[in-house]
Length: 329
Ligand code: SAM
Image 1 (cartoon, rainbow, N blue to C red):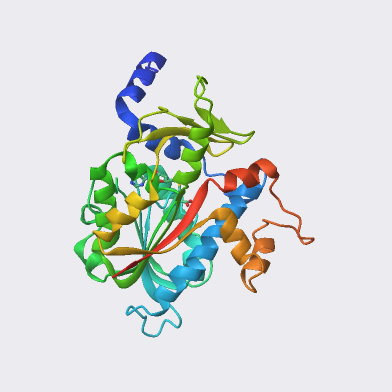
Image 2: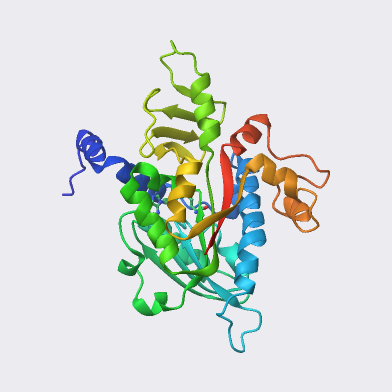
């Protein structure tokens, strides 16, 4: 007879997995619910807005790099360029890469279940197909060459994208270096590195605003909460907090990414910052754009009358993040 594991054993196993284990467990166990059920999420407005920001970032920074790509397909019309999606998750950006008419995509994530869902999403794409290779890899401790054959890496990338995932690498200098090496090693000169990460300045401002005698070192609202591990310790790497976002993230350990620290380290890998903006600012800069304004309606961020799908708490949570772009020189 099969034996159920003792819940106490599971708890202690989880403790021994460490933070990476908790992150993998969390993302692997989140069900794939499909687009229709997704619309029932209590934070669907925020999810749609995050997706719109990624679309804006990809259109503004990835499309030009793909257009100047050396990898042009012969006889396949408009297809152009090669992308690495690191921390691809369930493949939430696959359709954005299809719209960008990429020729080839390599996608990796530490959560193997998510990687399979991403591959399924690619297989289910309608319209013109592009080549794609998916791999499970801890991109912050292992080189890309462990997951992808040399032939897959021979032609450099035009774009490397890391959406809502780079901050997990800031647990240690060693991990941040491994991540940046993976970003830069196969990125062509003139290629771009884009991403979205929590806004360290905002997070630390909130931490400073917590009264010194308060035992609770957290802040948030009805849909999100950030709980710091410690009030005083401010290391360059490994400054931990737990993130809770209703219907999305359940108290997963994350790390502060100090922007200046990140920029300095990235420069060692030939990566130079060309854009950094808070999500609220991304919205105000692009909400009236001829292409991104109708996209707000199509992506259900606002309705036909221009009313937002986000309540105030979701709008506040949206600005936890910043979007960035770097150029390889
Ligand atoms: N980029 C996707 C998106 O925008 O929909 C997924 C974002 S999800 C919030 C964060 C992802 O980071 C998870 O899929 C997680 O497994 C991945 N991740 C965390 N640590 C990682 C690591 N060491 N190597 C690769 N992926 C990692």
